[in-house]
Length: 60
Length: 491
Image 1: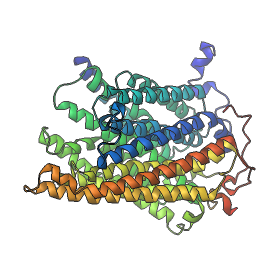
Image 2 (image 1 turned 45 degrees about the vertical axis):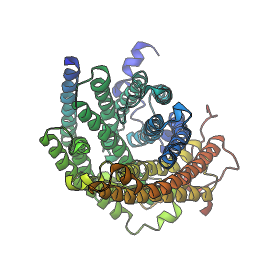
Image 3 (image 1 turned 180 degrees about the vertical axis):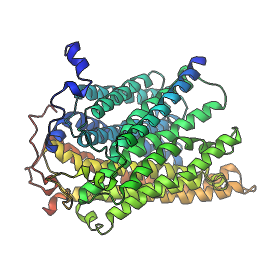
Image 4 (image 1 turned 60 degrees about the horizontal axis):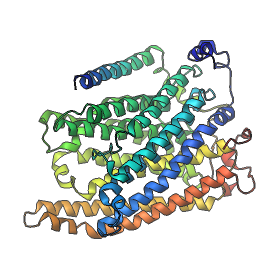
């Protein structure tokens, strides 16, 4: 019983702490700056903005 | 692997290859075996789960159905259905999609794939043992945690492997911006093992007493949706929608705001299942407030997805991925706002203990999450197998069967549920008679199950053909970038 509560509370502190640490890291690392440009990371030279990448097979 | 190289594999500085540039197709190919393993088992459990659900549904109108067989009684069948679709189908599909997305977004080939393969094996073993246990009569009677105590540690091992793998991948990612999908995935992969362990410790190994069990139960059950399925579904949508139409997300700022507000509010939501129950009023009230606050993350996602799609809705005609994903995204908005409204106590007294709640649950887990997963699989599988989906018409059948099926189910259960709830308000109507109001709608729900099962059979057949590479290879536009042909298949 006691062990269960300790585990729960310890887990809560650890998890909340790691979420805060993640947010702190994100701010410090500049992850939250220059967001419009950041949204382009999923595009590459061979699949740039403006290229559709999926289609029903028959419409080829 | 000797201990020295094992230790060094946990730090990117020790691996000269990590920072090197890798082609996207190579990364895709590296995820091939674990991801397809998760997908194949997910689809298997989807078929089993649909069948169990279908029989459960018909038992509501035909209580005598299969009543000679103890393992097919409603009390076993219904939890077997729930746990099969939650853990067997939805979670496994989500892990597969999450693994593929993590590798792509970290922009490195998959590391430690043995960890994932072991996770998949433990996962399926856990689900198999758990479902058999429920059917044998060992259900724990705690909703969403019915798996008997001997099955859950097996599942936990799988969760832990995946969590560890996610940390390693994140550590080795190519430097640069962490895309919003990655935040969602990383959160899901780390939150869930903790949720699952905590709930199991407090309800099974060191059970807390009395009504607090209900609080832990619903804290867990709602967080499975909020901190596990929702982040994975949204991670997929935030990648697939911009990627398929080739346009960055409308407001990236909103997407980040949505992530952090979801992280802040969602974990408080569970107690709204206990309105009117024997709990301190502040607990339930805090949860109702948090449920209403969910408007913020939900509306940011809705605005973002709609504005990104604006002017591109024609793309729904030609992209299977987009068709399923956008269906899922729209449903996410509807089901979330519906969920917030159901947390308002005056409305909750009407809908609680009626079929309306069942409709809501299916809209969330199927209309939102499962449709997202289908959409993602239509994108991912051709890139892993180097093969094109064999039939566009079969994909259309799949879409229309499940889309009509789920809408029919939700609409009929909602109407039946409201009529049932109104009858329960009437002191002249006995509880038994209030059920009669729902009966015709339960017939319609039973029929909708056939549509869903039919759609799943079509999808399973398509997936099997993809794995076996039946038919001639097509140079399809779904594979605009020439795929790296994977080595001789280990599958």
